[in-house]
Image 1 (cartoon, rainbow, N blue to C red):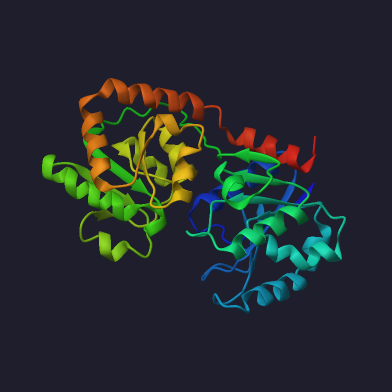
Image 2: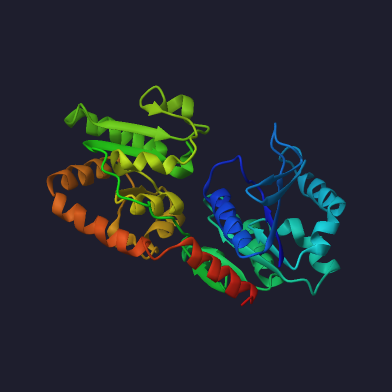
Amino acid sequence: MNILFFSRRFHPYIGGVEKHVLEISKRLLKQGHVVTIITEAVAGSPKKETIEGIIVQRINVGKEDRLKKFRIWKELFRLQDLINDADIIHCHDVFFWYLPFRFLSPQKPVYTTFHGYESYPIAKKAISMRKLSERLSFGNLCIGDFIPKWYGTNPTYVSYGAVELPKKENHVAVKKESAVFIGRLDEQTGILTYVQAIALLKKKYPKFEFIAVGDGDERKKIEQKVKVTGFQKNPERYFSTYHFAFVSRYLSILEAFAAKRLVIAVYDNPVKEDYLRMAPYAKWIVIEKTPEKIFEQVESLLANPQKEQKMVNAAYEWVAQQTWEKMIATYLRLWKIK
């Protein structure tokens, strides 16, 4: 099959959606499918290239403004042969990219994966766009049960992502009083709350080590207080040397489970709270809102390693079943491909 993905961002960007698209694409290639990704241009990257066998076509769409969608459509009409040749079209959130072609080729199968949420409060326009995407798609995959609740989406399937387990146990010594954050350094990932919690922890545990692996708008603000590495290739490797995983996004949570680390997740609005509490693994992680509560939870867990180990073991048993092969099977069922 000739499969065409639309994704706003792709490699070399690092993030949950980017990795999701990369990993499923690699496995679809192994099954003999042809995979093409249309994505926004990146400075320094060619307009067209092949990455691990995946054909990547980049479009120049300019700045964020009200005319951007028209520039996107103009670029896509220029690439209409890619759309015409595809057996399956699949949009990762950006269904509006395909909107004109949905009416030009009404019989061509098109599907959507809904990842995350835009911001809080969720704008009525965003909800309306998702409902339209759902109605015009042949089926959809929701990443998280919070999406049907907050967007009114009727999911074909719901998933929480996938992960690849480490091939062997890592026996690197882990410092008991330590934690790692992996992700974008912005308000939505909770980094500011984590940094405030670290300040409290250091008052009681002066040698408590913390590192933030990532980059973003808040970097200048937080790197005066904690160590920041910037974006790293394979950032999940940091879980092997730090005790607690201060992460609040699905992919990083699953990768922490795979590394047998206890997750301390934070929320700052009702959508993010449901994002975390409606997950099937919610009882095996710590979910808090304030730095004070994070401090109390870390203090309690340091004093009760048996409780921590029980949570870690349960999370590992669950995540061991969340393979990329299982995710591919879900996509093939969605597309009705045997």
